[in-house]
Amino acid sequence: MIRRLFFPLVTHCSIFLSVAGLETDRAQYFRGLSRQKAAEYNYLGHVQANKNNSHSQITLAESVILVGIKVVAMVVVVVVVVVVVVVVKNYEL
Image (cartoon, rainbow, N blue to C red; front, side, top):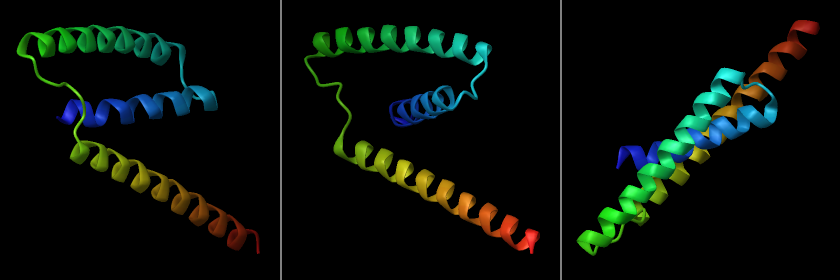
């Protein structure tokens, strides 16, 4: 359950860093490896789910927790930016 919750969060952070240009070549290499492992994991998960005749989709509770984590992360980023701006403005005066 924890892997299914935090893997998308790590992926989003990695995408944000690569878009921002802050990701190193080494990180891009390991992200490529993790994508390959994730694809293998998803394939094996679907094969196992088909064998057990069960569903391997994320549950509602897990998706709510994931959205909550994303919202908290966005709020923290906004608060940090506001605090930095206020401190810089007060320092200039």
